[in-house]
Image (cartoon, rainbow, N blue to C red; front, side, top):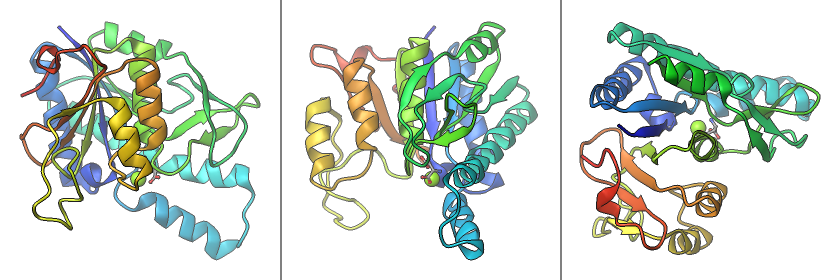
Length: 254
Ligand code: ASP
Ligand code: MG
């Protein structure tokens, strides 16, 4: 049995049909005998829409209120996904960043994770439930909601995987992994089956943006293997692994 953290990005949970599809995939992973914790992004363009709404009221809104607003996006997707998993016949329990124990510094809009103490998530997993965690958010020392910067759910997922001691962190997106170029623009781009952290960081600094830079740095620091793959296909994705790890030994590759 493996402990797997799965992260689903905004395009994978864009509408309720997509959320039902993701729920099936999560339950399937659980039914194979794994413990599963899921980190979700906000649905589709929700975060952009929330920002537009705020700016239509005030061109420089208070940072604290902005973060309070933006954390709402992930709360919508986490609770809908928990319901969809319930409708599939499995048990799921959703947690905000605060409930999942994400403690950050005070930088609203670009907070850094200082500690992750996911006691409630661990408890849910030990009871046999699937845990769903809102990405991109935490709580500062004052007890206020903070956000980690755009695209921050990838970092939430890796940080949760590290704190839980997971075997792998799977990042589900809308492309089949990491490519030599953007496959949506360059049709001859090739999928990279497996790669090390250093090379990904180089690609990211050259403008490739499949994974948030901070997420890769975090994974590298704690040797957390990543599997970047599509939630729309069953094809293998890209494994990002520490040197010396045989990628074929990682769980849930099919
Ligand atoms: N929903 C947030 C954003 O759009 C976080 C994320 O998607 O990772 O930036
Ligand atoms: Mg998003």
